[in-house]
Length: 159
Image 1: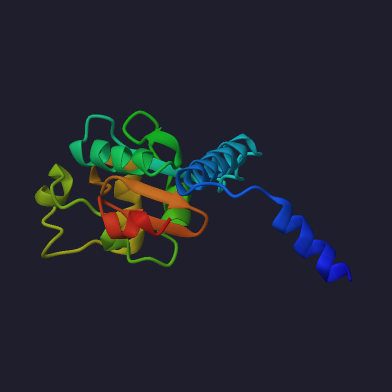
Image 2: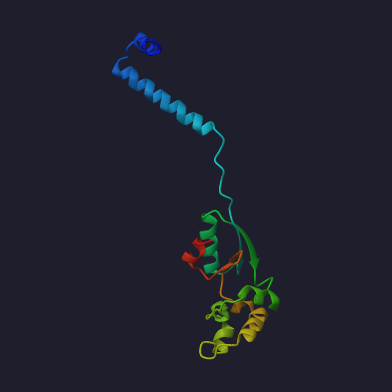
């Protein structure tokens, strides 16, 4: 009996033409979309904050900065020429990494001391980088325990 009642309700509806049905469906879709748009905004993924050690006039640093900003990272900058890293900061930064990766081959100190042929010891390299920030390969991007040295898109994307 209940089933007959339901059938009766459907049968009692007036039939719509094909164009009326399409218009109703389109109106329904518009309403659904606008309701979804009015709904609470989606929770955004928290943007990661990166520390960027750079020299503002360095073209490679500008390129990395633009690349990271475009991807929505929050950036804290440190101009290593005006606010150089101390020996202890450099020791912490270099950590277990190869100290030679942090040396900038284009710097005057690197060329004058012929570091390509005679690489300095870890202790000496850190001392020299603290004394002459131009010797540090730029930019250095740090977040958590991860470090990217120089402009390396693949390394920067992983942050």
